[in-house]
Every structure is written in structure tokens, then in C-alpha cells.
View 1: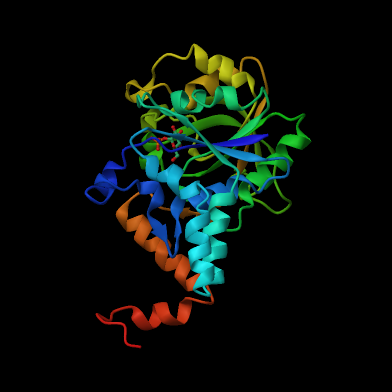
View 2: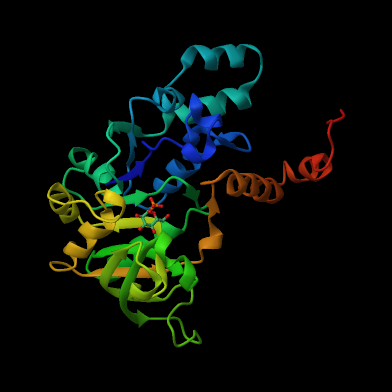
Length: 299
Ligand code: G1P
């Protein structure tokens, strides 16, 4: 089983930084954003590889995940074994690449990885967000296993005035933890999905549970994507193909706490994510606090 990470976007929100350096390689502390997503994608049992949907404009992503034995041995000769290990680790991750040179939407990006999936179910992880404890996809796999291996998506409540930014589900809560509220919007609640709509106007939204960007999908979705027309924004939407999948198969949604993940999709969110990760890292926190507000790092 494999996971797909779409990564062919232009990174316009980070221009000019992304003029010649992909947004996926922006660092959070000392690791590029996409490495956190790859590590999260490999966490569920049974996932053996990650397929990154890249564009030919961003060969730097492939260079990052390639082995570099010469660089590694140069670091080892200099006694920098920790750094050599970190370089080795990035090159040893089971990552492969397919290409989406024409940006036709998320559904099209996922379809570009069809031949790599071998007819198996697969995860999709959107790359502007990562979950440091890597549990979200693991929990989704548990829900899927409890429901006959159905497709499962992660959702979370969003204020009504923001529904038009996201995919929104319709459905009914079928399981919630004891003591949870009656709306079924607490973390851990499971919904049976009855409809999906991409970027609805607030008055058309069937709920205010939005698709967070983590999907565990039945292989049948690839057949549907093959014939999927354009939807919201003139793009081939994954959400629209999932809506068609509902006519044939069951689908579930698990309510997650989106704040357990870190957003890297805008300069402000990326900066906040760096601060959050520095504060959570015992090797960095003291230096980070000391450096905040100072122009020069002494010593
Ligand atoms: C995509 C999906 C949308 C989802 C969102 C999460 O939209 O199409 O359903 O809610 O990611 O970030 P995009 O952000 O690419 O417009």
C-alpha cells in the first residue's frame, strides 16, 4: 500500500521565495516541510512507499530524496556523523515520483499516481499541513478496518463563514465517544458520509465539517477520476469523484482536532509552525526563546 502527496503547485503564496526553490523544501527547523509529510504518510501499518506528484519544474524535490553517498562520506570524514545520518535518512526514505505538468486540480494530481497504486487502497496527504505525532492517518485506518475497509476522510468543524474555502461533508454521526456532545463534532466521532461538496456557498453547505486534507481511499476512486469533469474553480476535484464514489461504496469521516497538525500553507502559518515546533523541541526551545526579539545571536 502507498500514500500520495500532491506537490506540483507553484507555491505562489510564498513568492518570491519560491521563484527558484519549491515551497515543499521550505524548512521547519532543520527539515523540509515535505519530509514531515512523508514521515507521516509512512506511519500507518502497511504503507510501504510514498508517491510524490511533482512537476518537472521542481527537480530539487527529487534531489533532496536522492542518495548522496559522496556528501555523506565527506561529512563522516569530518566527524559529523549526526549530520551524515540525517542526510542518509532523507535519501533512504521510500519515495518515488510521478508528474503533473498541467495543474488541472487535486483530482487530476491524484489520478496521475494511478499506475503506482497497484489497485490497492491508498492515503492522500495534502502537503501544506503535517501532523507531528503522525496519528491522524493511523486513526483513519482503524476506522476503515472497523467498517469493512471503507474509504475514510478526516474532517473538523469550521465556522460557517469559512465553508467556501473547503470541501464540506453531509452525513450522520454514527459513533461518538461517551460524554461527547449531541452534535457529533467532538474529536473521535465517526460520521457516515452521504454527500460531499467542494467549496460551497455558506447557504449551500450541508454541514460545517470540512475535509482537512487526509484521505484513505478505495482504489475505485481512480476509475472515477478517469472520467471526472471539472468542478469548482474549473478544476478536476477529488471531492466530486468522492461524491460519485458514494453511489457505489460506503464512506466514513472521522472528526479530528486540526490543531494537532501544523499549517505551512502561508508565510504567517509557516512562521507560526516553526515557532511551535521550536517550542516543542527540547534541543531548540531554550535557544529559540533566547533568540526571540534579538538581532544578533551571541555565542
Ligand atoms: C483542497 C480540497 C478541499 C479540502 C482542502 C483542505 O482544497 O479540495 O476539499 O478541504 O484542500 O486544505 P484546496 O485547499 O486545494 O483549494
